[in-house]
Image (cartoon, rainbow, N blue to C red; front, side, top):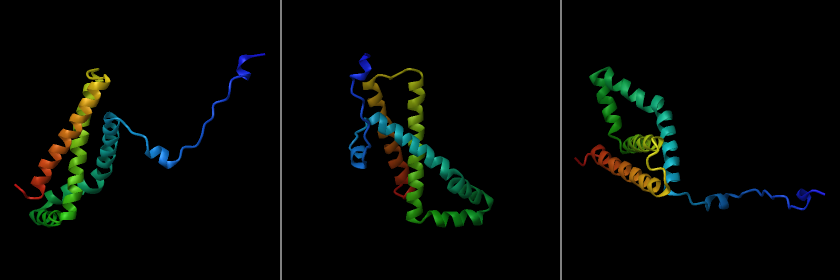
Length: 137
């Protein structure tokens, strides 16, 4: 007789939503997911928001003034702030991944440290640009 008959078969159970929500990703995993989310955000918003705003702003001085009045709305500024964060995070994380592609900082400690740096730098730059956007300077 073979030995495979005596081994218990593995059991695969369905995962529930609370089990999935209890998983804790490391900081590098969260940065990776945010990189994908920011890339998708930029991909979707480029033809829907960014290009139409740019096209209207360069058409004539009157259209620029109308865009300026629309962008002065606080809700529109929040949308622009999210787009600014998406761009800055995607840019900073992209530089991190280019460095990782050069096989620099692939160990666990360095990956966690660079992920923290990416999050910190992108949020700090978003804060600076957000203060400028909302007219603090």
